[in-house]
Image (cartoon, rainbow, N blue to C red; front, side):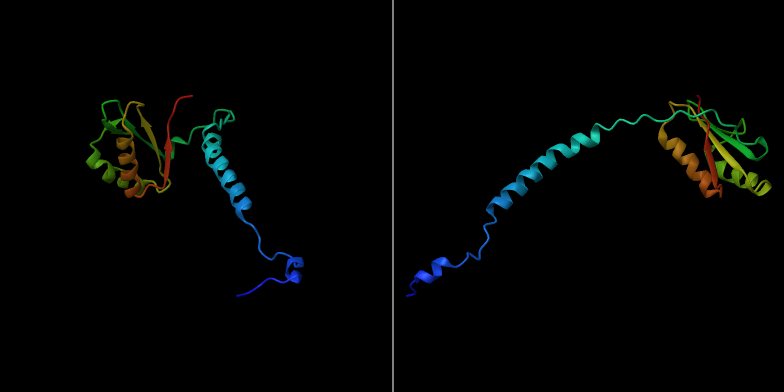
Length: 134
């Protein structure tokens, strides 16, 4: 058996009590978890207004339009989606600086616009633009 001597009571305690530290850290973690989603959802952005920009030059542009029924036209000529890639390749060969502008009705599903953009990219078009209203 080991007995304490009176000299051991006067030595400094070498153990640290971490229980209060853990309690404080848990409270801070809970506060952070509760407030973080509120901060990210409450962000309001006031975007700057810009002046109207000049349109791209007409000699290097072609327009792909998708109407409300999902029908595609290239430069105001009806075009099936399957033949769009080859038509764009032909235009790109004639003009290497070709810019394709997309004009889609707001009721057109996003998938149809994405498919037309993917076809243009597959055809080798590097410059895409969107036509919108002010």
